[in-house]
Length: 375
Image 1: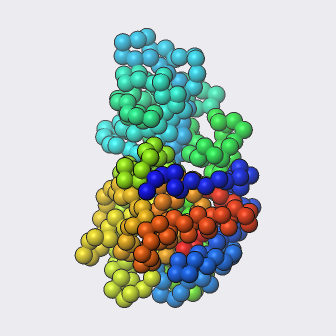
Image 2: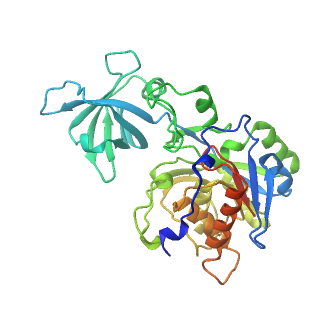
Image 3: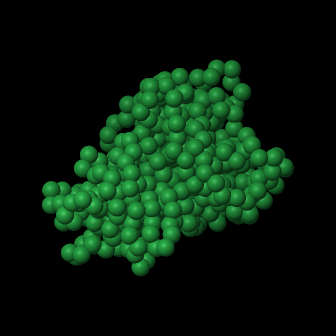
């Protein structure tokens, strides 16, 4: 199967630039996997669409202010003076290690051609001359990937909070890249249940939930549990190969707490439906599905879910509308087609038809957009 098989044309005006005025007021397209029927609903209708006894799993990762701006400070063999020729944009994607106050991170930088191993990068707070963080470039990878070692800081994460920006995806346009984040983005590019800090992008299907909707789910008899997958390159890296068989996903860290492991084991044992909120939750659940009994643990996953995958845990999926030819769209197609159809291409065709319906009916796409419930 080709990556190009998952292409679709999306009018630019349907790419949501801002969240809806009120959290939880998004539209929701309900997709019946058995019949292919599509129903236009609101996200607020979600409790009525689920059944008492359903288990809903959400990703509670908290988004880092992972987007930083730096100036070059030379290399070990050069004079350590700032380079006035331009600003380097840095997106922290995953912490590699932390010891003795130093933090080593994998990151994406641009323009990458200017940033080489051995150089230092200086990060300043607005209006301040002295850098508040300094990092040495330890290694260079493909497509702008760099490994950075930050020098010890009194409180690294507090400093990130001062100088970092919400890592909004590039299709969400803001007037000035270096300008302070708006109150809207600070609040709305974070789920109301975000807990463990570590994601380089929001688990966007969770952005729709409000405390009131969570309470309505509980009143309906829907069980809610949480796991953590820190979103990194594995979720949002672009596909650079031609065929699905050649796709390789970067590993992302996850954690399954004891309460969630217990809830999953009970639901599986009792034959109750398990619904995943978002592709990150789905990938985590299907990664741990081969265990005879799910135990609380932490690990990493590089699982790629494509058409032909047989889902072992997930019976329902709530997800946003995704980019053309992305691994996330391929995951949704895999789930849509996992209903015993003899046609391996059934899911792709069904999801592209659902996306065409969404486009015709003016649904908003991507991170701040509307959502889709597949059951």
